[in-house]
Length: 230
Image: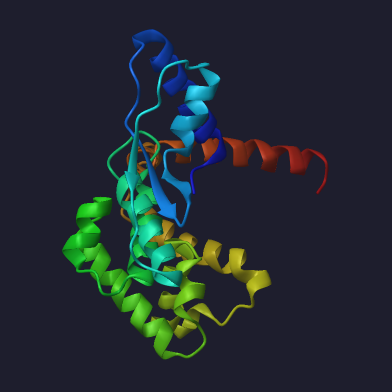
């Protein structure tokens, strides 16, 4: 899922491009479900057309699905993922990691190379995701569907708890605190090497440019909470 602020800004940017160039955007992908057709990739583009009050035809790629029942749903979702994970503006590194994880969790039959080519996430990272999936499923505490609904960050944390029991067996209510402790360990390691804080910020920016904005918002919220005595 895209960060809400970035989604709105991206729609505005695409609408501006439409008005400036007068040329349509990449085709919207629609798939068939019986007599009905559904968009699987291009919702933001459609919003941009509406915002720009586009009067021309909207390009679309129609795909006729011949599978049935649940397999048809899976096929439609995979088509949407494949279309959306091209290196477009709205896809941050974190978005791509979460998408690669979702594909890995739901479509274990796909090769590492296939997942990598669809998401631009490295094959070594996909291999790590496969290890995490297998280990967590083997505990019997998780189902494949449950894992697919979660972010890669949260799944990786649970996997790390299996590898390092000292992290503790936190209940869901304490999940954020456990994540903070895990992240604090990593940051402590980095700081011991004398890494400049500016370099840490630059590294975060390269991972996901929106991360800095989110940190600034979190700092403002923390400051406000402190002033209110919360």
